[in-house]
Structures are given as C-alpha cells and as structure tokens.
Amino acid sequence: MRTLKENQKLRMDWAGAGVVWFLVLLLAVSLTAAVTFGTMSLPIRDVYGVLYYKAVHFFLGAEVPTQWAEGSALHDVVWLIRLPRLVLGAAVGAALALCGVVMQAIVKNPLADPYILGISSGASLGATLATLFSICAVWGTKSVGVMAFVGALMISCAVLFLANLGGRATAVKLLLAGSALSAVCNAFSNFAIYLRNDDHAPSQIIRWTMGGLGAANWQDNQIFVLAVLAGTLFFITQCRTLNLMLLGDDNAVTLGTDLHWHRIAYLLVTSLLIGLAVYNAGTIGFVGLVVPHGVRLLLGTDHRRLIPVSALVGAIFLVWADVACRTVLPGNEIPIGILTSMAGAPVFLYLMVRHRYGFGGSE
Image (tube, rainbow, N blue to C red; front, top):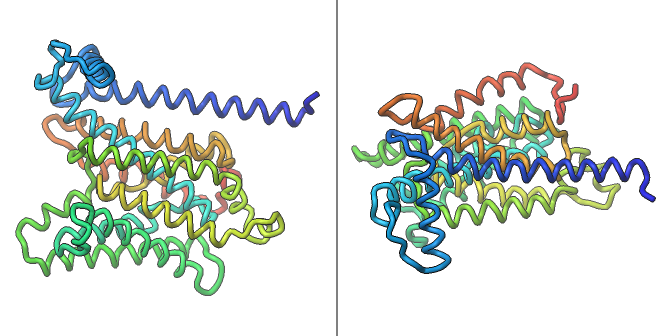
C-alpha cells in the first residue's frame, strides 16, 4: 500500500506530465497558427496543405501535383520563409528560458538572466569580431558561432568571478558585474566597428544588437534545434543537482554532492546554447528572466517541472512575440529584441523592488 505522501507525489508527477504534454500540443498548434499571420494572410487550410505535401514527399518519396507543391508561391511562403523563422524562434525561446533557469539556480538568484548578466553581450562581441576581422577563420562558416560561444563563456566566468570577490555573490554585486561587463562588451563592439571603417559594418552588426529571426533557414535550424533538445534533456537529468544548488554548497556536501564541477559543466552548456542563440537570432533580452519567473510562481521550484515547462513556455512565448513583431506595424517589422525588452523590463523592475523575493515567489 502506498503512503499518503507517495500518493501525493504520484499525483504531482502525473499533473506535471499533463502540463508538459499540453504545452507540447500548444506549441505545435502555435507554430501552425502563427504561419498564417504576416503581410499576406494565409488560410490555415493552405498551411496544413503545404505540411501534408512535405510529409507525403518525405515519407513516401512521391510527388503530389497540388497547389501546395514545391515551387508554388504558397509553398515558398510557408516552408521557406515563415515556418523556418518560427521554428528558430521556438528554439531560441526554449534555449534562453532554459539558460535562465539554470543560471538562476547556479547563483541562487531570480535576477540572473543571459541578457542582464551581460552574457548575451559577450556572445554578440564575439560574433562582431568574427564578422569584421575574420577571427577564428580556420573554422570557416562556423567561425561566428565559435566566437559567439567563446564570448559568452568568457563573460559568464567573468561575471561569476567579479560577483564573488570579497564574499558570496549578492543580487547587487551580480547586477553590477553584469551591467559593467555588458557596457564593456558594447563599447568594444562599437570600437571594432569604428576601426573597421566600413560603411556596411553597422548594418552587419544590427542583427546581433537588436535581434531578429529573418535570416532563418532549415540547415542552421537543424543544428540549433538538436543542440537545444540535447541541452534540455541534459538538464532534465540534472534536476536533483539543480535542486541541491538552491540549498547551498554546505547542504549539498552533506548529501554527498560537490557542486563546484557541476557549476562549471552547466556554465559550459549554457554558454554554448547562448552562443548559438546569438549566432542565429542576435541579442534577445529578458526571455530568460520573465519565463522562469512566471513558471516558478505557478509550479514551484522543483526543476523536474521547471526545466521542461520553462523551455516549452519560452518557445511558445517567442513564437507569438515574432507574430506581434510582424503584425503590430503594418508594412514594418519590429526587431524582436526590442519587443522582448519592452515586455521584460517591467518584470525586472518588479523583481528589483521586491527586496525579499525568494525562489517560488515566497518572501
């Protein structure tokens, strides 16, 4: 016979699994529905028609002569333009939300975020140097991604180092270190543009400074989506350790876990994901702050739920943020980094005002 505690835990596990599967379905619906929005509205029937044609062609190898066949205007709009950018948006949203959850556990502070801590700025600086000066050219077309990863990793280490000088990291020290290093990275990026003295340099860098999904393509998407899925699965296996990080190093040691090497490993994985996100979509802020905070308030602090739910909510959030960017101003597209900052900044100020904020929203 199960005890009352075991029954409660089983019900919680089933409830958590139900939430995850609901969000998976919602993400699929969101992707197909979001394709219909844009400068040219599309009936949902045409979207599913193109997807049906691609499925038949892929699985059966048969050509189906329809209005949705390859080469038609409907096919190109759905499959080559809108769907790749929405898939990229979902992957970037999941990656940033996932990294936000992990960073908040590493530093035990809900204010941690790839954008606020300057890590996105470090990745952007690396991408800028690779673009303007062909640094790491030995990596060929992947040099920008490599430098974005290196920049993200260096700033991650620098923020943690500075925040821990003179004692344990606090929210104020963490924010000051991130703000200072973010300013330094932005200054060096502008200095690099000035040194290059190229009229086209600002337009090359604008993609990373304001964020955008317009350059999405299926080839790059495949690599990034696989990386995000692998990172999510990896951190799902690390839920126990992430929960221990909230208790502190002393308590973790008494339970037989040394958190030092885990922090380094998690920092490497999050830096890789952030570097790839910046390489593909530029600097998109506050997703890693807003999404984990909202999920934690609703579902609590257990990372067994927090990791998958935050990743899925981040994906859905950025899909519809991209729709808003393409439809709010008819005939113009708002950079997605601007929209997420406008939505995330009030949440950040709210957290700053709540001095006694704790994980899960309890004071």
